[in-house]
Amino acid sequence: MRRSEQREHIFKLLFMTQFNTENEMPEQLSIYFEGLGEVSEKDQEAIQQKYDHILEHLEEIDEILNDYSRGWKTTRMNRVDLTALRLAVYEMKMDEDVPVGVAINEAVELAKLFGGEDSGSFVNGVLGKIASGKKDSGEEPKHPRRQTHSAKIIIRSSKKDHRKAPEESAE
Image 1 (tube, helix red, strand yellow):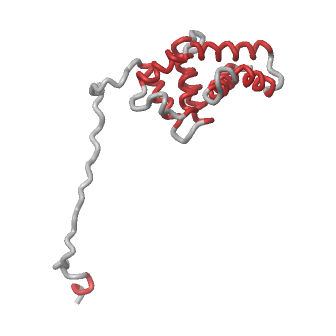
Image 2 (cartoon, rainbow, N blue to C red):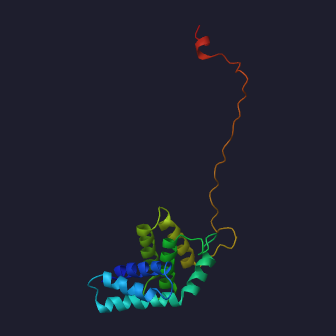
Image 3 (cartoon, helix red, strand yellow):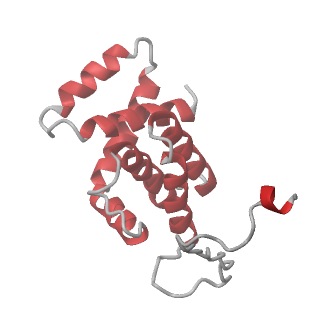
């Protein structure tokens, strides 16, 4: 099984964790793995081990996410996006076997596959900040943003326009 396939299974297990109690999860994991069909013992162990490691570091992962996601604490995030972010942060910060770019790309793909219309860009934005180490501190960005055009509002009077109508000037 490829790593991206393993990652998708880990993502699904982490997602399930949000809907089941800690006591229910061993049975849910068993049912999940039985439903997969033929998965090698080695792959199942790798999935289970990474899943367990993420759960062990969940508090630390959520703290990182809360530090970098301006206006979107983990308690407010879409559960699919949150799951993709948790998996990616674990891989970026705690799994030396996964390059940061791969972790980000895979998380974005999972968010696009299972999330909403904006999930991919949201996940990419948060992970990009984490990868760069730039928290939103309220400081001005190094490269100023382009100015936006301001719209002019024209209010016309309800009084009759004194100009002649086109049909009147044709005489």
